[in-house]
Image (cartoon, rainbow, N blue to C red; front, side, top):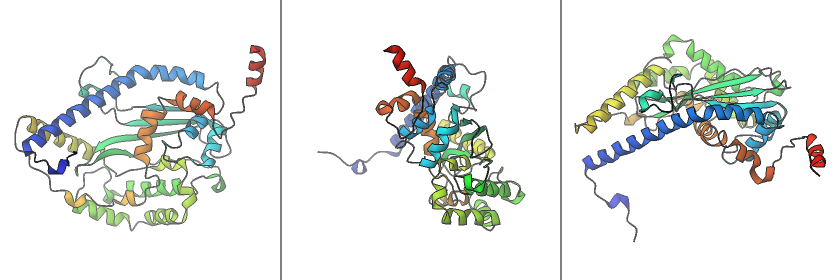
Length: 329
């Protein structure tokens, strides 16, 4: 007979001990992630040299990973990828440059969960950029939240007709710039509760916010494009707030390990809050997709490319294959 965990009475001190074990295991996982990255990055760089010989490698890879990407890549995105995407690179920019796999302790590796994605493109009909690079920072919030946040980046679409997001990336960038340039918005500060509510209310009155909200409401097709990934923001947490929140978290953990009483924060009012940037998020699955690409699709790209005997909708169009087969025969 199975038992319901809710029927089990556990002492508060035991629950705290369980949480400490969970935190310790999470730290180990994060440290392993950092070490694995340092040990494999040269291999991935060499792998790209071989990948570059294969037409449409990344287009086929993303096509075969459609389920893992939560259907975030549309047929129009795949057409662009097939014609122009030449390489994808994932790095972890907040690992110190002098970090070594032999180092011991999570403190030696900065913040390994922060990610940078660099997509490189050949000349194409859609945009003039040869490279789109976007950084996701892993940050703790003072309300107890934690996750990836990012600044929107500019995509230089060659014309409105070629813009696969139908203006959404430009509108998201305009709203970001409007907030960033307004001192009253304090995007680099530390705001909580009433102060944050006041900032959010003011942001919703900005013309750029209203223009973005209207585009999202009326632009279903454009909102489906993977290229909205490049304007993802997440629940914005500044670097200053992250530093304070992380210091408070570590202090609480140290106190708990010492058996001291911990005073719980009363931030429950924010639990169900819809933050301004989340209400107009152009790529709601940004956090999940970023982690999936970094931890699954990118390291396992060869497996995804070879999946189902390369049974993809993308025509890789390698005319040399026939010649190679004839020579082997």
